Image (cartoon, rainbow, N blue to C red; front, side, top):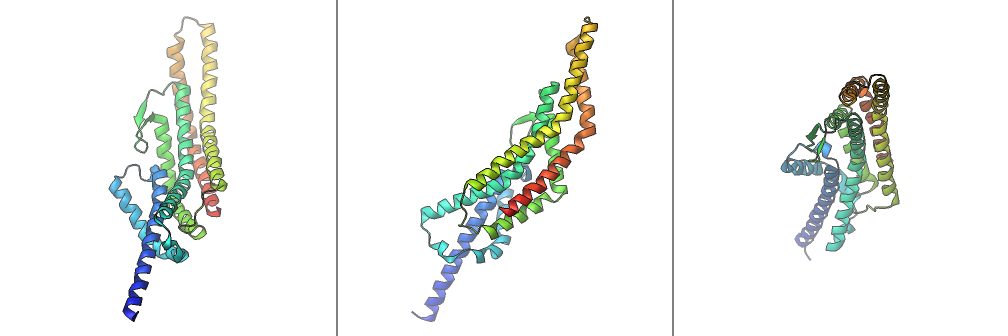
Length: 263
């Protein structure tokens, strides 16, 4: 074998290695984008694909050195399983943040159900499902907070850290990752309850006041008066406490990113 044949074999192996790394990085990043529609819910599919490819091109030179060359010798079915694990791992990273966003949005649904405003719904571009107006408002609020505190950069940094801790084609989906998702599911629900608790408590008090008024003045239309009082009290308290939703989300987001870096 002469020099040119050897050079051709080495070049072919290098290109195959880089192509494999590119595919695995794109799979993990694509899983993150799929699980976190809050960052790409309003973007067309072509723009999302181009975004994933552009970020992948930036990450591949720094990630490729951590991938063993033996990974390019895997069989076709093994490559598919590796890509599937990369997609799942990316979905776990994005899903941790999405659970926090959904948890705070849950507060809007709880408040809407407590005040009787659940019929005022609007379409959510990220999910395509109708959601209450308050839930949509809180979703937009936490999205603004996510970008304002640099959460998108922190998320990309956590993704880059994951490539150094778990290089492509070396990811294993174990009980630790499952526990991470379950824990943040509970944290998301807890965050929604913390945001909705003051308003729901206020609505319960107004219902108690309306009930007492109805006993002293039975000729009043309790349904009409009670509904209006509930809505006005909820909107007033929401105006006073809506900043707490952003504060709760910012705190839990920082904790989630820190925990992702340690996994």
